[in-house]
Image (cartoon, rainbow, N blue to C red; front, side, top):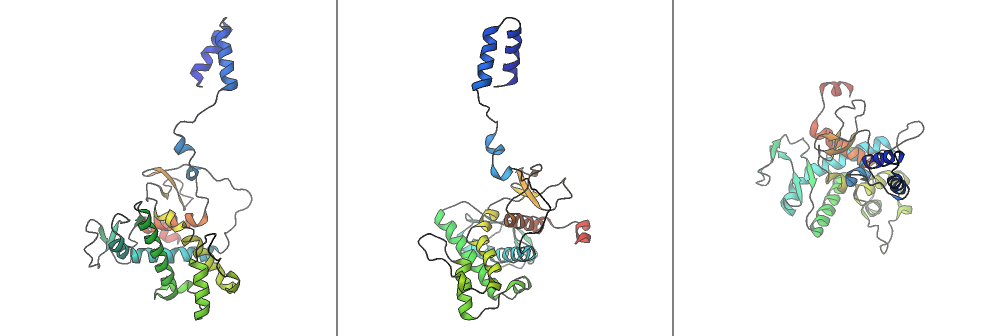
Length: 273
């Protein structure tokens, strides 16, 4: 019930319009309010997160940053091959390396080979989506175990062949009810943090959620809140949600890294780093 309907009724009631006043009273007692644009207002990603107490770092905070950087490095390295294999309807690439000889991605901008290519997973055939994501996860873990790059070598676990099989089972093993659970008790305790972080990112599809979002449309860094450098939800293109933050730490880290990989850093931000 709107105020324009309520107040005139009470005004008439004061002048003898008892019936109108009774109607307003009944509406106030039995009516229900409905928010306009409820899909946007009530969306979980647009809800503010209220925190209490002193701030402190998440468990394994430094490792989380490095793991996210290594995962996105693999995503960028394999994006063009995955697009050729699964098609442009399954994966979108904003730009491709200058030294690429692939004929695919003719409509993409060309950047230096070290640049992040801007990957977004698209909604298409369910089977193709699952196959693409599973192949991407497999390649990410393979890069961490064997790829000759600085970021991957920083988190590479030192494992014997048997320990490697156990680590892979814990990292990429299925979590369905009818499938045996990963052998965590057989995995060395020093290797568990990395396996747990990768399992959360890959098997629980945290990475997929981040890669399906459009940069500057669904997320980005707030242009006005200069004291907050992390990614926040956007309500429209280049329109950041006010006083709203992502509550999931890994989603926050992934989207923050993706933003700065594509936006770059200002001179002031470089001096701060």
